[in-house]
Image (cartoon, rainbow, N blue to C red; front, side, top):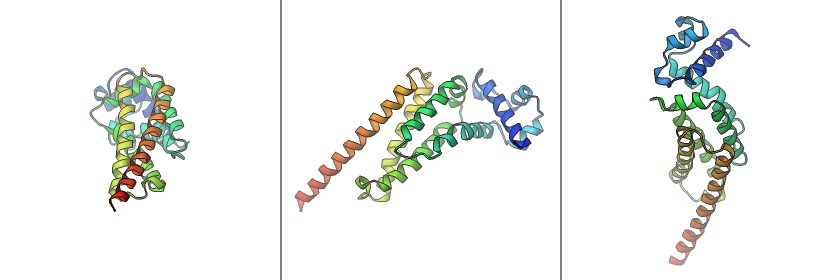
Length: 194
């Protein structure tokens, strides 16, 4: 492992340890560097600020594993893994997700938007929709899913992560079925008007 990566990991572990004890907004760069025994110059060589470090942690530990080979066939397993990680890092996640920087929610929405747009384009049910309509469907799924996950975290992650991921899977199947039924109804309604 390169020295740069070792330093980034040390800074990340420092922020995670501090973030498990106090809210992210109250943590300073000096706190982070003091905790892991490096100077501020070293911190600023690797990161512009604590938000960039937080983004690096989320990206490396949450979002890269989440998005690796992510598709509609395995998204519930990936969600379960995400929820497990979040629960294992509960105090850190809860203290950072509540920060004024909305990085976690915004990035998670982006990941789900990309997944759903790609997958919706390939589904027969949605092929008749114009691009803007497909984006609205994708936003609906992405924002809803992200909202449930963020609310779960903000509420203290009390619900079992397996139970929550199973519930999200059932919800997605029900919404897909309702969308299909609406499409059939709409298509038949259009046909009867001709």
